[in-house]
Image (tube, rainbow, N blue to C red; front, side, top):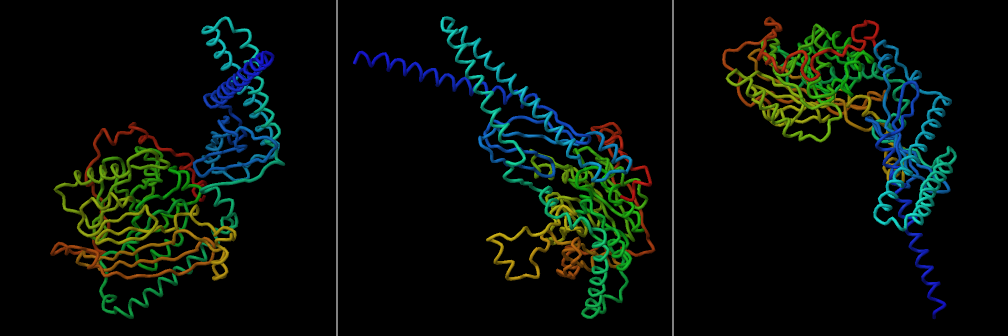
Length: 558
């Protein structure tokens, strides 16, 4: 029994030291990870940069988060490697390309040599920074231990050295052996990035397909007029007082040639757009796609309120300022706190901008909408309500008074609740919402086999627009709603046309004695002037215009 006692004691001492080595190795590993996250490494190509850091896991995954989707690359190697995260950013040189109108996808794509050099440099620097953080953390732990128990310091130095070597060699060897091209197990992309990967062919023929779709939609308009005259001939004999084309959520897709056809065929007096003209809150988007030229080509007033995708902050007015330079654009809130009333053939329109902005997070959106609706009500208190009140968010639209109807967009889906008209998206949410059904899986195979005509077709929101007609007595006479699909793919598909009696939309009769008609023309009046604190040029990012190439006529064509 006595001979076993030293053996047991030696085993316990060895076990304690092994546990201590593991604990110290974990401390060193944590210190290395924390160092790369506090001071990430920048790896760069000519037009892109990425801040690379080590993740506190052994997932063998490289994660590249971006504002338009995330990329995940999973590796299957001999050892589980620490995860890596790279925060990708666009460098200033891309802004220069945008400003000059020379942005092309071929310019932005790095070649293999450039990409490999950036990866190699980044990996080396991450390794050095991780090692420095691990050793620094180990030294701090040793100092703390030496102060607490000075007599046992020499033996702990040996343990900590072994632990640090383990913390460096283990993850280092795993990363070296695992993060190789041959070990890539899966590439995954989310959100917009996944749609772009799966739908490159859609983007190729976008312009041609849109032109084909314009013919389709104009035929749809002709069919609607024929049906309307067949079942309600008396209404067609009465000249309208004013006709408005209602659109929303363009999201950067230039379908203004189609909109121009609708304006001409339907004798539209003005277009009302409830916002989300662009995707990412920057006016240069409209330059690249020719949207501003498209708006100007309509030849009728284009009445606009800002949506949550039309700004980069709550006070960013760069998109509004770019639009204000178009002669036919009417901004209902040109700058914060300034409200305008537009009268088209005697029908009055007012409204207010959305305070939300692109990629906003962590806000109480319902409270925000309540506040801006209350501000509009307070500003217009005591004034005669306008016939149409326009805003982007449905939550705000339901909280303002109107003489006839309120309009909102945002939801990409049509709705009608009494006098509240919710518009769908004129472009189906823009090109980012046009995507094909993914390849067949076990769950989708049966449905696709049942209807082979639609297998692989586009899914997403339908395209829709409305035509709101007022009579010569300034009352709403008719709301006509159009909806169709698959314009981007070049295979338009009719959804429906609905004609709604204006009496069911306008809850109260118009003011007696009013007259509306083309003879009255268009008139723009200030409803409420902006307060100096809200409308000043230098306030909170709302002052200077982000021209970024907006002045050059050559950039306008997209």
